[in-house]
Amino acid sequence: MSNESLDPRVNRLKLGDASAVIKVEEGENWNVYEVFHQEKRGAHHEHVGCVHAPDPQLALVFAKEQFARRKKCVNLWVVRSADILAFDVEDEDMFANNLEKNYRDASGFKVMEKINKFKQSK
Amino acid sequence: MYGGGYIFDEPNGKQLREEQQHDDPGKLSAFEERIARGEKIEPGDWMPAEYRRQLIRLIEQHAHSEIIGALPEGTWITRAPGFKRKLALIAKVQDEIGHGQLLYNAAETLGKSREAMINDLLSGKSKYSNVFNYPAKTWADVTVIGFLIDAAAIVNQVANAKGSYGPYCRALERICYEESFHLKQGHDAFIELATGTPEQKAMLQDALNRWWQPIMHFFGPPDKTSQHSEKLMQWKVKMASNDEMRNQFLDSYVPKIWELGLTLPDPLLRKNADTGRWEYTDPNWDEFFRVINGGGPCNAERLQVRKWAEEEGRWVRKALMNPAERRSLPVA
Image (cartoon, rainbow over all chains, first blue to last red; front, side, top):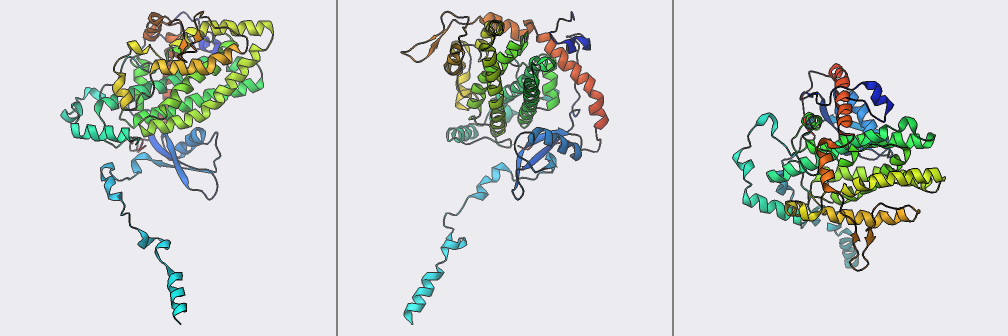
């Protein structure tokens, strides 16, 4: 190309032909890891996204660069996306709730009422 | 606005199965009801083939725009005026590359690999935002990009963040948070030139004159010429029409340009007090299509730099490759 870039670094690169065919092979961008971010000590790790990396150690390095350069962060977890096991979305209905759930709530048990009734009856 | 052009071929020329070509009417209506209720669609959910295709096109081209968009600004890192401006510019360029990564991941959840997306960018099949095919000639250009192009991108991204596809919305939420710094530092650098010496003002006015048409092009062709956006609006892939977003941008930012004593190269530009909408000279759309199809001043350079980076970085990627790794796709 007639090197007319405004960037001196680009001119120094002596770039190849614009029509050259460059092909990236499938898998060349490594694997995918899910990233979990802990904002402060004592807090849960929360899922924030993914990074591409060749192994877990580098996934942590890239995750730090991608997800911890701004907001507060005290720790990160990474896990290979393929190792995440999740329910099938089509089974979502199994999470449907019985609306009447006071049998498993503290407020569903009236202890004081019974005690008071007992005391009054004496 | 990241529209136009190529969409997506199934990998290896694989043909779609019958049920992928014709959406099941029952599933389709359940899908549309979910979206109407304001629910998000997640990667494992059933979705119409066209919804998936259009989302891949949109998110992929948004990702390419972040990566290519860092190039004209990256050019100025070595020449930024002063230490704070240099630090801010380095941080901004790093953010843009990070945004590209977030968006590629969101697109990957729809089934197109990162490598396929990069290949489509390098071959010119897949597009990126047209504004990045213009050069940043002076430091004033960098301030116009940092202030006005980022402002325009934010108008679009804030709208899209309310869309229906969960992974894209989550990526945009994070992006919008970081973009607020980009906009503020751009505005600050812009004001510094606008209120500076006569030479600085003249340099800024010149940059503004050159960038105005690409900025008017930014949101894409006028509504009267754009096709099949009704379905995309119903599916909340597209959240506002091109003209609506352009109007919103003009409404927020033209006053911020005029208040600094700068002018814009359009004698018809004004807000109609009766309709509340902005009136302007229609930019040259033939020029827009000429540039998007490869005829702009920087198209060749942008792709050459990306190709160089892929080629020169290949040995590093190969050296780190772990053959025992089992491949996986992003979960969410």
